[in-house]
Length: 301
Length: 268
Image (cartoon, rainbow over all chains, first blue to last red; front, top):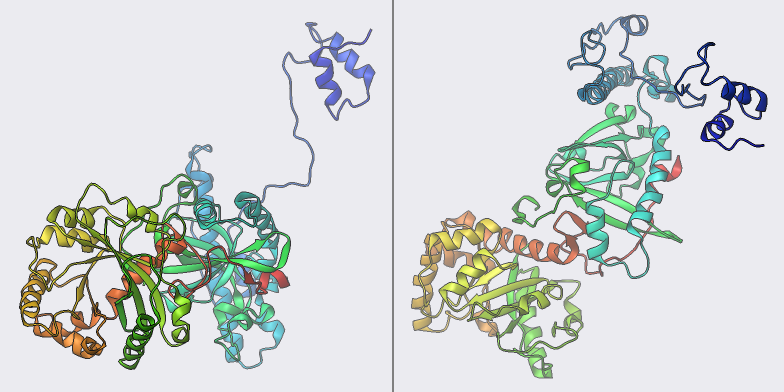
């Protein structure tokens, strides 16, 4: 007679006992016995997969000394409470947030270092294409690259199409109100206007939205040649910041962002939508449930 | 940009204008262009009693003045005369058809309502008449804080003694009550001879005690704010998500598509 109990079914689902009817039976027979190494509870072992948790690593001092002895910077000191600091409760709600902050800060710091190197290379006039493409150097492997984030952008494009449900009779009221609650992590945005003029024209993929900032990953200067799309620029030249690319923190205040939304079944066209940064100064998850209001427009001119 | 937000539409009801009326409107636009104005709003005045048609509530046909499209930015505006506070339902129907919405309050209660609650861009007061109420700082500034601006029409007072006398007194009252903030100067006349260049018009307010930069702002910055407010009501969701890329100048329809631009993400 076939045993149809839940225990047998559970065990037959396990990879460890797959197709191994005998050992399942042996375990089931001995499950209530007082002897043996069986346990009176279900023990679950982690399954094997490709997925690995990558922890942000703080740059070690010796790496730098080997590569850039002349710069002589101290390794970044963690400024926030982290899980590594001894008595800290490892389930603290600050843990993820602080590690993220630390990761962003250490990355920005590394970027500044890279920027110095690029400007040095530029000044020495011996700069070849490879010299400027500094992100490929070993010391800067931890800098974020836009290539790694194109996948999340593809994901976002399908998400936003599903979310908006665009079709022929899409109206402003549906599309606009839905977009105001949409997630922008993964979106490709461009700074269309900003009071801070050096920010105008920056394009990149959003990796985080905070209350006052978008954190985006930008392309690298000549390699991606993004200035070619700006009609106002004829012969684009790239500053050392733009050559390094990577993380940029863009304030929402007094800034308009351009978002391009693909039209389903129409690869020729796209919707172009502006976000008024002044009106969305909320955290991403707060924005989802918030009722927005009209205000006096004197800050939008 | 220099704006004149009040060029009256020849009809005050939904009948279509005659050929001669359109011709005089075109003459007026030509003079305004000559005087250096860049942004014009055609104003359709509507009495509270007039019944709105069921279909299109905007009688202004911009195709009639098509030859100005490349030289002037022309917008449509509606002005609702409000006597009775209880029935202002018309506004919600007009909301989505006009670029600008303004009201003429005929009583103090109507002014208070317009200043504090209604979703409008401009409050237009008949300054050439004796106002039936006294302008209070609290009422006026509750409007300007909300982004609703006060409109001064200089056109009517130019040719008439009595109107001029009333105008000077009333506008001084507005300048005092508003603490010199939130005013828009526009012509508001269909008589081409009463139109003035922006410098002349601004000088009028300087005479009335406004300093020059603020007077200048009444034909440049302030009307731009009103236009932006009105356009954002049409083209955005709560001013946060704007459809299209040029808020003031895009004349295309909402939800329109654009030719796709190749970006970095497409190339990688």
